[in-house]
Image (cartoon, rainbow, N blue to C red; front, side):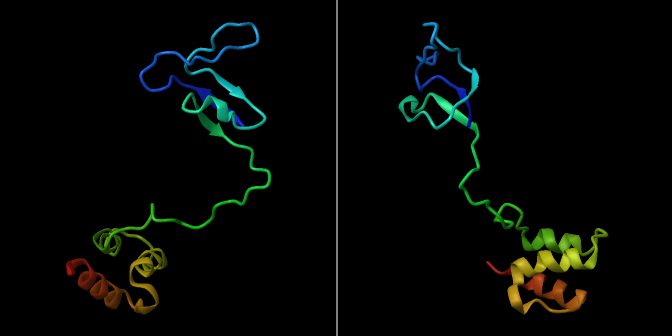
Length: 113
């Protein structure tokens, strides 16, 4: 696991000392075998060991577009299947087959409060 040291709230140094007795500076990056729980609020995890962990899959909410954004895709040259997939995220299983019907359904969705 790779971590980066930081100063706890209200301080300007890490308060963590190396083997040589010298304080490690804020921003110092290091690899550790496991999370140093005793250093709470004094480090950020940059990368973790993925052994024994399940990968996160799926699109999540971050790439879900609004009805207005998907409607804009209908006229900006986006391929139909990409447009339809984005619309299906909003309309679900009731997504129509034709572009005109999808546009009408999205317009209805966009005007709903």
